[in-house]
Image (spheres, rainbow, N blue to C red):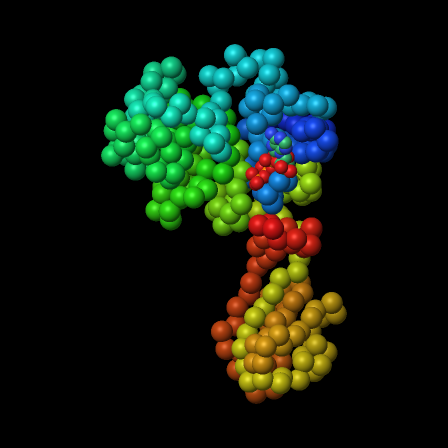
Length: 311
Ligand code: ATP
């Protein structure tokens, strides 16, 4: 039986990458299993793009090893290129090229490409026809770069911020395409700043900060890893929170951040909810708009680093 690492789509171990005296990636370890969507999340400058570009063979590691589909992305570039799809943040497309001609040309280079007209239609590119790449809008350029990355039906696709700058409609179309790739068995590695994108699409999330992976797991695992969640409700101001706290399990916090708005934070389970609502019943309090709020990936990142993901 092959080990998980040997069978991985991507295996990065101890990756270090410097630009002059700036260490962009600082001992990064990441294993991406075959199949599914892996989202690499982190604030600006965390080292996401450098890591992805090293996996794509555009940058050589200063230390550490990178294997993509079991191959070295630099030494085995010729073998790897037909098997992977790459969407660069900067597009990487010749500016004078005509949009759909480029896509058709790229499709012809592959043995089993996707249907170009169908793909162009799905991504709203059919109207771009003979327009030069440089004359496309930013969003159209972005969608064309995505189409170019996937048209060859790669085994593995790297998408660097695939929805940056897209309007909500184009963003949803991109999400649908990524879901279909996943269903077709394509391994997708994407970077994003959008938590909702990762929550919607990713089977696996890796948080990158300061050039390292600081936490990883499924969105569910990560959001559960700190078992603290929140119950929010509204009632008349000035509830006796000391009395409420006595009823709730140890380690639970209850606060009134603004008058009449209450937060109960702790290990929120059915028992805690029952205790809270029975305390309300005994106290003659109607908890309006009572909601259990799960921690988001954004909250988890904030707890891990003390900083906002978008900082
Ligand atoms: P973003 O979310 O803003 O795209 P990122 O996580 O992708 O950020 P990188 O682009 O990998 O981060 O950059 C990591 C660090 O390396 C940053 O401090 C950046 O300024 C620096 N850096 C990246 N490319 C170069 C380069 N070609 N020359 C010098 N420094 C660079």
